[in-house]
Length: 463
Image (cartoon, rainbow, N blue to C red; front, side, top):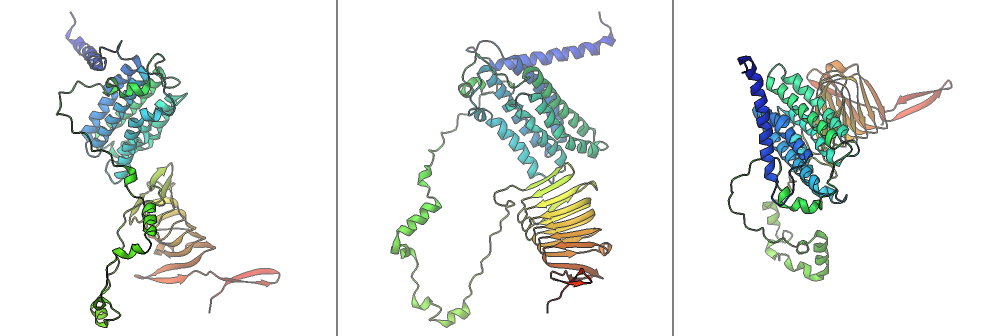
């Protein structure tokens, strides 16, 4: 009879057996009497990942709560979609290339939902948590990778390590649960990589003797996702949706214009008749008492330019800020002096760079403002129009190239700045003088003479 000291080992073994029995019992919910055999080995192996490391990770997400909790629900949905796709693959032959996106639609939408959630919560206290998952969740796309899907999972895992390291740095001394959260997520991806290398070494394995993938995907057999107990009967089904509206019944702007032109003189029949006593040129007193309402431009909160989505990301040591339109406050927090900031194709926006960075470049921007603390090398403006700059700390060099309209406000620490200009106009340097700034225009026109066989160039002042 085992002693008291053996009890912990026995309990641990019993727990493992219980988990396997539960997994086996749950998996049986997907085997119908009409389907010969049980689940494939690969699907069962994926269920072990879900019931193991992934389950622990979801529990950590619920403990942290905040914006991490809704993200965990999206992750669960993504893994359900992955499990359902693997179930379809285990029962069907490989579909045509045109049919594969249809089968992967749920997985792709779940991945996009997670990445969009991260972009919408950049000011969240858990932004690094969201980014760690957002950067690596694309690992679920291994099902479409060949011939090395395992390496793809590893690559996606490494893509999120920048943010997992920041989570460890920020929370290591504050809360242990965040460290456990990072370990659980890395372990989940590591187990997924091992699973792919073992069961899908050179690509996703399909059933050579299976049926049509689209037909099986529509069947009731493949409707459930991650193994869960059968739910109780729910409420009655909702009423059928209303009949779809015909696209042809909705007039397009082009057809509306053509219809108006075809009316000829009848197009004026809908206009209001103005009587003589309402005409201002016949009644001067109406001009004095009436005011023309001013047109107020509708407020547009769009942050896109020409259909391009705004980009605000750190790529290695370079901050890429692109396509912002009408945003009054775009903040960039630089944590290291070797980081650089590149602002490209923005319009009517204000950018604030906090911390000390290597250099800042504003390229092809219009009506934008830049406020920053200090840079190590230079601040550059290229192909810009009507831009402003203010430095609160130190900047050694300011470069203006092919720019029309540039106002530069200096601080007391930057009075020794070097200014390099080329092919630019309407440049003004604002030098602090007490609590005010003194404006100094930068020369745009130069006069060159030959003195002693050498060229001598001096700025000229227009009369």
